[in-house]
Length: 466
Ligand SMILES: *Cc1c(COP(=O)(O)O)cnc(C)c1O
Image 1 (cartoon, rainbow, N blue to C red):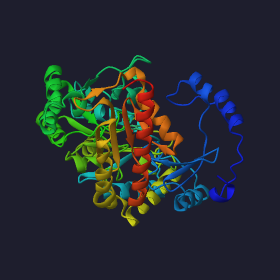
Image 2: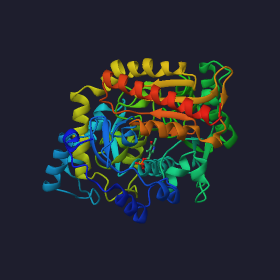
Image 3: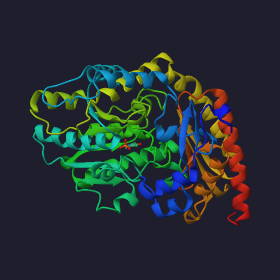
Image 4: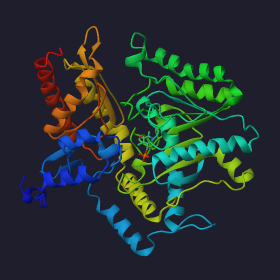
């Protein structure tokens, strides 16, 4: 692709950048030796739903960066907001009875779009720090309430809640727990509500109730007086876009209400419009006490996270709590806050949340779920602007691939080569495109996916895996 077409100088020395990269840059969640062997793909520019790499290749970013670039790449408004704030007041802390104007304004703005009952925000620098804050806040709450024995937080296998010590402990990723003696004490896990894997012989609604009642079984096993909270993503993201049956969250709500335990909704992915509502809990029919957010709050233009604190916890912390000995240098960072404010303004001005709910979400669902007709696809499902499909060896009856083959990675390779970013989680292929994606671009994306599934099918046959 020429400089003219992309509007940028594409004369990057990719090989030199890759050498420098593997020489000095330790990437997150990466086998560094393997990466050094193949060389990283170096991204250099983005515009709308597309990114370009150092070779000038244009790629449709079906993952919004990492579930975050919700308003798309190349937004001047966000850059200008940051630039102005950097000149006016690049930093001031919020410790020692101090505040800054953007942090004040953003807290108000977020609570205005939050579910009923949320009037307060605690800022962090990331989603992981948000979930660390959740652990501290939940335990602090029960201490103040005179029930310090309530320490246990229940989460789910295959959940992703970040990569700090507390975040990885809350998460249910076996590969993370194995490294670093995790989880920390008093965090336990129940099964995820994955209908396809754990209960596809049952109707989804029935399975949803069974999956939710694992929570009640665990509460009773532990002793209800020891349980502090339950945490879950409305739709599990990094776990592979696991969309729970419609009965799941209402039943979870019934159970946490029955035992008086706190409910935490980790909305680092689902918050700010991803599921066609401002927060995923609104779509799923739960009423959390705490909501973790990050990623989409700034559309990833600058790091920021936080926790929305509901009335029950806020009243206790504020009215009876005294000092809460927790916080971060960058809690309420003014530059991150102005970018978030401008990002919210874009979401509102362009009615992107409503657009996902009424237009692009239903359209993606129709087009994406039709991929289930493909001979390689055993299931295709979508919710708002997240979607996932399962690559299978045989459709009737369902026969899955040997996980050691890595069929998802093979498929991902075909996607990349054809200019499409689709992530592989085991044999699940997932997308979470920017919320600005149009119907026409959804058609383009589905055509690309279909073409790559065809290529994968041929490839897998040639390898003798089918
Ligand atoms: C990404 C993610 C996190 C962690 O956020 P970081 O900003 O990477 O620390 C936590 N929870 C969920 C659901 C996420 O998707």
